[in-house]
Picture 1 (tube, helix red, strand yellow):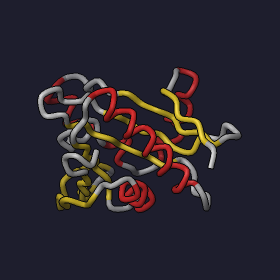
Picture 2 (tube, one colour):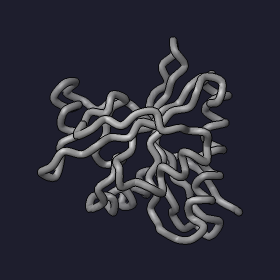
Picture 3 (cartoon, one colour):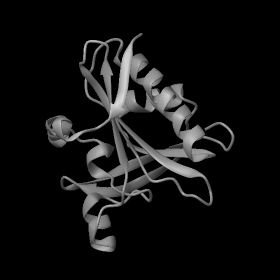
Picture 4 (cartoon, helix red, strand yellow):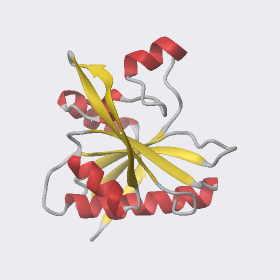
Length: 164
């Protein structure tokens, strides 16, 4: 399968706006601790630095976005937040391959020893993509996030040290 993985640029911002109606961890989480956007802004009065990447098909069709938190230089831990933009038959396998490439490059560039990700319970495709890349479900935080008038469970995925 052919794909292209590149940093998100200003021209890609309309893609992020299409996510506004999707209930997903990519929209609701802005912290490595699983805080909602509002909670993190209240606590820190700013959103932490992170990098975002766009995964496109060989035809230039957007497949997904990946947000990568800043690596912790002491522990070698980094957060990875995937979101699938399309629901086509081969999208999850292409995304899995693209995420594998990104994970490998992050490990080499930043000496990453462990990765983790938070997902909402409805993000089944993203959970499959993480599992395909060596992430295991480590915990479920029951009713951890409040948004859209309700509490939501938060799934915690991670890699073991040495598997990143």
